[in-house]
Length: 180
Length: 131
Image (tube, rainbow over all chains, first blue to last red):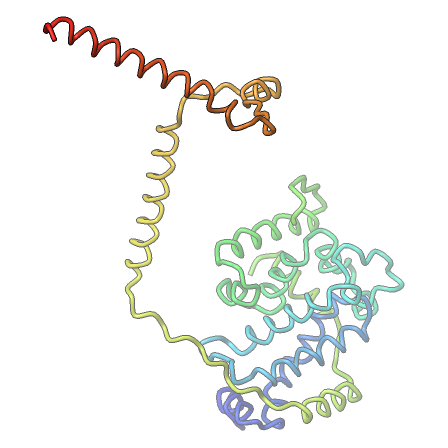
């Protein structure tokens, strides 16, 4: 079994198979992330396809000093931003549960999924930072790179996001500024 | 890991998503039609030290500040704002149809007076010296 670096090198040489192997472990996670930003499941699938095509097209510009997942998420975020209107829905606009693709993918749980609340309470960039930190276990530096933001911006907004979601989780009213 | 982080991780895991076979085939087909683009040529890194940039910036800021100070300290006394009436009064009215003789008449008179004065002065000098 080839390592990630070997797969990257093979993909840079033009191997579709190597690239497919390379992104296989990230596809489901990327789709889950894109699903939080799209109006429908089909849109999320299209966004994933565009992300992977762009990643393969520009694989030779990948800098191995970055983690591959960080680079991939950066493309996904940029791609989602390009598709922002009208396919990608502003976070907070998905109040109609029947049409919300994310609601259909959430397993039954005793409590409400906190990411639904996060999407309503945080702006899309802070939401993305929170997702990359807590759903993807990315470091602050990697999140900064993926979002093209400074490390201090990332730290501050992660802290703010945490405060808002902590209040939401504990049922206390967070009277902070609207994040935007 | 704290309670919030645990909850967020758990809730993310509860979002059940998987790439379908159909999407998988679609992506594979799309990828086969794509060729990786040649790596873009990036500009070589500057050999100038970082201090050069700072020194240039500070010099620029200092120059801009000096210009601002000079411009603000050498402002001329504020001239009275001309009103339309003042402007009309200040502009000489020239009768462009006036004959040339009319325009030079006063100067010619002045010249004649001066020549007359010179003659009188010359005559007086001659009398004084007994010529």
